[in-house]
Length: 518
Image (cartoon, rainbow, N blue to C red; front, side, top):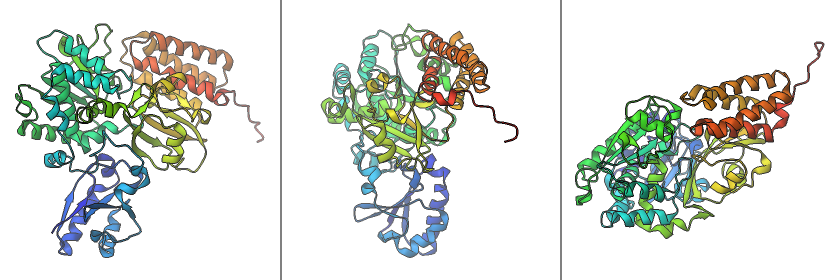
């Protein structure tokens, strides 16, 4: 009987040599006359252990990692195909503490299955949600998603069910489901992991959204920087069409739904839904004024649902297990689970799916293991390059939309980037303004001009030129951008700038001149 060995085909694992490791295992098995089947699964999200090689033995998965090509011969010598001990042994994969403590709903199959095996997907409860959806009325589907408390996982946290109901109730000969997979925030990779590791769950979620709202066409708008995700999604869509999951009769029902993948050109602002829609239409990616809302006049002027990957990928479990099952996870008005991405200067970086309610302190220290450098944590930025910088005094903040808003922060796409005590927060504030200036679509003055003036003002503070006056000017600029910008790019740039000035004032103080003799 062939021994099954799993080597991730996820971009994060490939970046550290997974393709070469898979090839080395194949060659070593052939040289030893051993029958080995290699499955290129998705990543489990424990990025410090990549490439994580797993062996299936007696209905369990044993993990070894991180594996280099030079380790492969030694693994065979030790008998890893039989689950033998080795210096790289991590025990049973499911028992690794980082994985064992998670509540995996959206990511339940990621890293477990062959991403392009529909039989694997079905075996691990895939398509159960869609099967139930085709037997329900669209209104009942919308109600179930609404009752679950699911909120947009792309950053805004808007209730998904309300958006769906608006589109469902809107009149129009054609409606669309648009998946925003333009994952451009620093420290975020959950969308990519789903598309590369469990693409059918996104297809299933989009099909359910289509049935619920009367949309017959879906688009996945993703980044040109994601070639592996694009290739995997396209192949999965082709399989789904062949198996009648997509097409004129979804699972043999009267509902029709199909999906196309579209690739962006690298503009950060196209992560904003109206810029994305312009880009999909073949226009320049600039922000549209609202109203009208995309739910009423979106793609090609038709009613359109625009949801993030994780929002849509969370729908199948809601339809399968019920609204109350999902709603029971979380705290306050933040229901369900959220895939938190730990990045930056952190020992155990990766993806951690859990119910809302953990504190930043637990995430950084208990789960992330503190800084990789071993130095003290100075700040964490939550929510991408437009997220606020939180100091250690705010680390007891609960991971919850309202709790973060109360501290002038935002969860965004749930990326956490950690900085140790060598970070210069004035430079981080400058980066935020510079990033906004580079990525601005140019349509509105507060974003286009405010960010450019912001860079200049930070530079004057750094040079010690009228620091008090320029700090006041920078705060005024931030206020104008926050309340005057058309979209979140200009509107959220003040978060990192103001939080850096507020919590790390010492980095904005004039630097004493150093005597020439010194």
